[in-house]
Length: 320
Image (tube, rainbow, N blue to C red; front, side, top):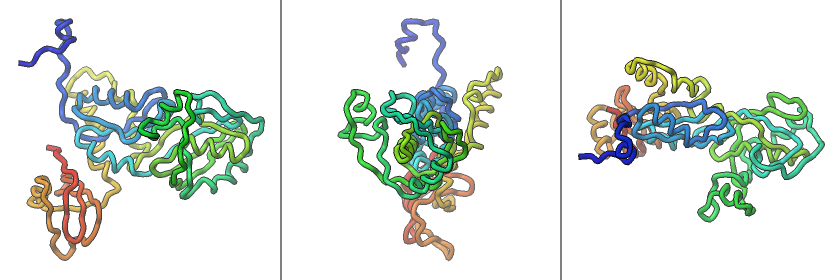
């Protein structure tokens, strides 16, 4: 017999906790400003009563926008979403640099100079393509086993090495003298706060991020966003509420949208689910594909590696 939890033992009038269930899919949350990514995952997990959940890339509390949250079997696709392209819209306020490169930290440098829109635009080619970028001191990068932001919060200087990042696009979309609104499309590991810091230094006027919105992570775009209010909509009928929540989810395979798709037979799917490789036969069998999303008809079976006519499973899905 299961012993009652400590809360129930102290308060026998407490209602039983809702039973957790298997829920599979992606919830693309339009995260509001002020909420941590960890808290957002906890809220989504509680609302869906899901057994398992995780996010595909931290979004700072001061930022809003795209926070893909994986439920159940979708958690197996998280690395593929995190490796995808990101897009941001952000505001840089000129004339001050801060310890955190945003509004959370104290100002460390100031300038009376303000750039024109043409000044900012002229420098953007220097910050596009493959560039070397020093991450902000307040970042999650580990230094000797510790997070950089933990070291920085203790008042110690953090020496972070420049890393190569890829910025595909960087544009000014608005400018009023005191601030510029920019859009960036970039690869994994790029820090928008570092772009603002380095632009400000190059312009000789300093700068920091005062608003940040993530508009894309991998295959997920603004059209996929779900507002936080949609999660807590008041729906009295339990069946209607459950159907409403199901409608908010994108299917697990959306997380693999950027992988080539490969279809297999039911017999081959059964072998892959047992962890066994299959030989790809026939005139149209691929010789080399690398990583693939394997389907049997419309059903997602596995993430596999196709090479030299052989398909080996890496992650197998159990969506039944």
